[in-house]
Image 1 (cartoon, rainbow, N blue to C red):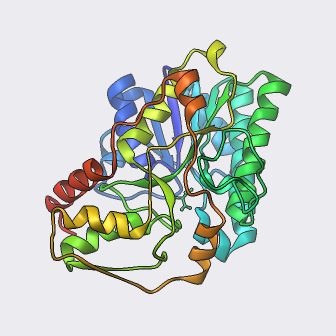
Image 2: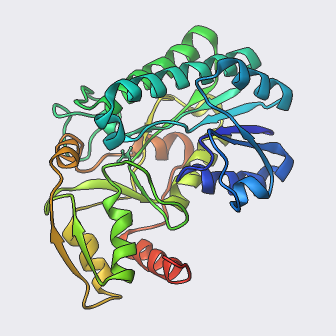
Length: 316
Ligand code: AKB
């Protein structure tokens, strides 16, 4: 990986991944793209940034060719709750955007990464310590696009020899940019409200376990997998990766170690709760550890401390 094009670069993952890649590869070797510009944003101001709608295949191809990239990281997609509100748009953006990305990568013979998610699993999947290879019949549009996307990326690998790689992200928690339209977003909002109001109303019910990960571990995972020795990869699309699994009361308890009077109550959103109920409680990431050395560094309390410290420095 020497020169990378990133789509959806202004989203929650892209905003941090682009900065890391600029450090690793050099500022001129990262082409950040998104559907619109956000002024005064370091992704836009401090390096190469281009407007790109991933549905526009010709522009996508031209930009990748002109920039002479050898890797494409395709992050532009709708998340679970937004895709559930507008399933047709979820299908068309998540699938056509992916097909366009894969076709651009095929034209350039570029390495290709597009994230999958714990959403690729469904009600019939074993809930606890969900294995790498198991039953996958998701009941959400987002999940359907993730399973289809995994299969498509594997297809491009076997059919065309394209170097496709991916991870199944759990809920990602970070302080730089808010997530948009996910089911796991409560685990980010809770830190903002804890600092701002001393209390939080959770849209996810007590007792609902989901896998989560601090953003630094997620960024390391993308970079490490892309740099991994291809001959060691028995799997490709997509690796289970897990750092921690908790339910709302546990994150609240972790926050109370630093903000003792923090209070939480519930106003459960049936749509997001339904999505959460269909996902695993925890997944097994042994294959990622064995095949490319995945090892997360943040547990719940370390993440809580970092989130509260970092958010305290920001105007929220
Ligand atoms: C979401 O909640 O939709 C995402 C995900 C787990 O893929 N954070």
